[in-house]
Image (cartoon, rainbow, N blue to C red; front, top):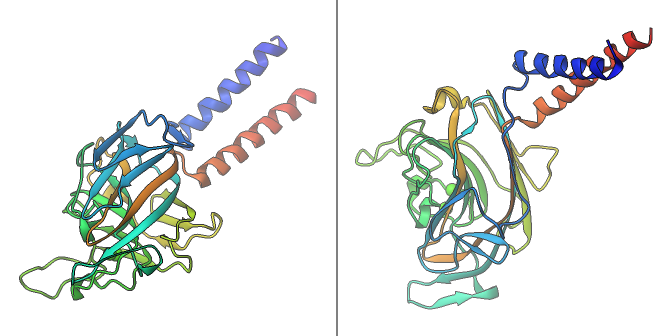
Length: 297
Ligand SMILES: [Ca+2]
Ligand SMILES: [Ca+2]
């Protein structure tokens, strides 16, 4: 066998082994370094491209918007989604009607959510406290919440928290505890909650990452090496996924009686989670090493 053919054969063997081993079944990747060309995204309601950013909801009273990858993606075997966001131009209306802006605003609202759902490519939940995911059935949301809702059953810790929320195939909800109100009963939708030290609505650009493998959904914020949460969840059993593995992924956002711009600055997605990529590379290099060793000897 000639050297070129041998190399091609070896590459095919490695690729075939990786696929048959289940280490990698497919590789779907999206990379939005900015949103000046937001093709492949389905924008809903208030969401719009503004400059090079994707403004999920604008700095106006009670808005709601969403953006979804136009096609279903494989989430069942794991994925990594990395994104950055910027929240600016906070406002707040007082009970007497006075509108505060700039440094007078203690807190804008209501935040941004990364959402996995198998409901609709045009899915959108409620504005105000709902961050755009409240009411979306068959979904899991990672909210970046910038407004403390006062209703006691919301169990909001503060105006600056990250939380993982799901009620399985039922309509999602933003509360962080189970309601004891018999007129408003629901199971506890909160799967994990964390308060970062950085003010998420400071106007700075913040980076976040969701790294999921069955049994482990890790949330990273600012520090891309150490997760702020690691939630034990299996999307295949929690949700009803298309063909057992597929869902829509995207973002939702809302404002209410306090408002601000919620801009998505960048977004990358791969249906091969980072851990598997490292294992994939290591295994591929090991096989290549063995093949090269045998060829030389
Ligand atoms: Ca919340
Ligand atoms: Ca809130």
